[in-house]
Length: 172
Image (cartoon, rainbow, N blue to C red; front, side, top):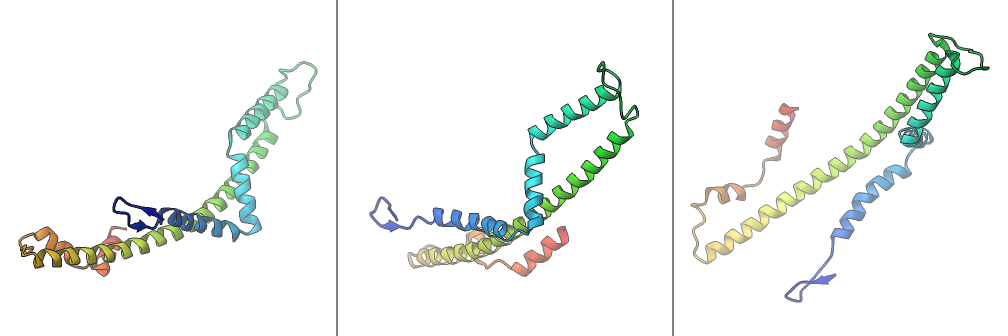
């Protein structure tokens, strides 16, 4: 807890909320299957500069060897490099499958986080509307006519979540 300027203790909830958000990812990571862990690892390792450099070296060496550019080394896969083409195709297939598996798992975690955000937003909207009602009540008690403030009057109405849902569904 920290104190504000009026010496009132205010709880520091920011750290707690960060912990909740991090724990969603941590929980999702803990529930990964072996294949999901493998796909995350493959995506992490093979999605880096090191793998790119190794591929450039590998393919350059392959082409140099198989175009008889290196004296004393005999070509084993002459142009049009049929073996190299097959190896590259298989590599691309395997890597794309691992990337897709990793992305699918990540999308599930993102969906959960998005749903959590939506729920929190709905709670916050209700709380803010309640606060506005309380302020409006205090203003009326002080003799301030709030009925002329159309924007405030609109804000005091609860949000029609069903109507909002229908509008969003139409847009999708």
